Image 1 (cartoon, protein in one colour):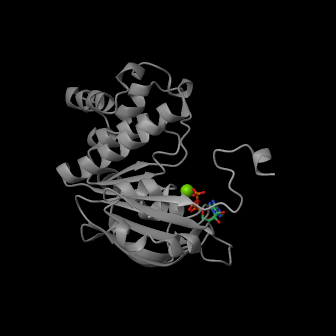
Image 2: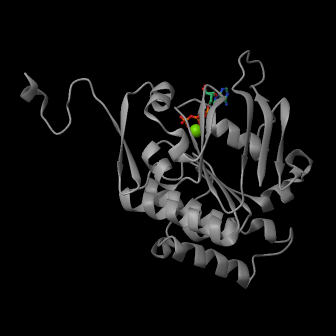
Image 3: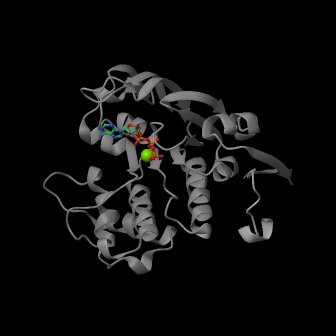
Length: 269
Ligand SMILES: Nc1ncnc2c1ncn2[C@@H]1O[C@H](COP(=O)(O)OP(=O)(O)OP(=O)(O)O)[C@@H](O)[C@H]1O
Ligand SMILES: [Mg+2]
């Protein structure tokens, strides 16, 4: 379980806080989704949780342990992170990038062993990208890179998975595949998955719990069907939406003032 308690963060020399009294909890075996507009503080929150940035007030507990009391290695063992942007400095192969996920288990003066190789290969297979194994990471597509970073997170076998927009470059099928996989893994392996998304429909389909954030403040928190309503989505994104129910699924779609949907604009004259 991850507990975020009354977190405040701002960058050095800045007047305005980026995170303002942020508190929430995420549970084991569950997929928790953070949803919020651009610039609302999602990636900042992730960087605070993983210890890259230091909040000036508040605490973060991972299974009851204060994360700022953990060493770098201990943190690397418990958090598998997929950042929003990632460009390695060297032209590593896809397999090397995934193998780096095993680094917390490899001794300082040792090399990865056969178990590490096996875990990395399994992760590539699980995500259906084994064919990319020997390609240079900087010569694959944006979506393929995202799948590789997810494979690296899987290979790491950490109890907490923090994925910052893991689906932003993925095609329709891979978005569904990846979120299903994360949800299943969390449930079956007892992991805590915290994921940021931009699409309220994907969040509504997959999240066990949604945390809505705007301007660094938590606006609502709970099960998708409980918190995602038309009024709240309009308040968060400034877009009017309608929510329809179908076979137990909820579909959120925007109401456009001039209906451009499925029509060329000149047809409206
Ligand atoms: N290194 C930085 N120094 C100063 N301000 C920053 C820095 N990185 C981000 N910010 C600011 O902090 C705020 C929150 O940014 P953050 O990246 O956390 O947003 P986000 O919710 O992840 O947005 P997005 O959905 O676009 O990824 C923004 O106003 C941004 O401009
Ligand atoms: Mg971000």
